[in-house]
Image 1 (cartoon, helix red, strand yellow):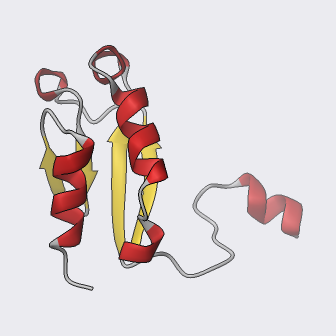
Image 2 (cartoon, rainbow, N blue to C red):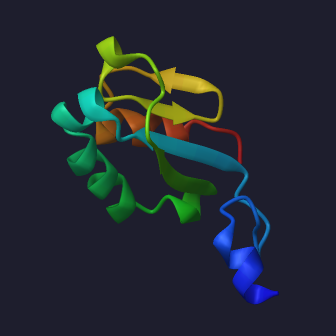
Length: 92
């Protein structure tokens, strides 16, 4: 059972965080620094802020690269500082 459940990314072994932050790693976002942005956010205390951090292959708005989606809000030309500020303003 553990092997089957761990294979699928939608199965969880613990409850999800209250908020979700997804960094786009598609081609345009990669060229505009998505890897560095994701690394900076991974170094931040996201779990302490009640935020689950992840990545997606493409959000589909390449002109806004690098893109981050926090809950249902798309952040264009995202920086780590701007994303962290937005995350800190979320309701706990």
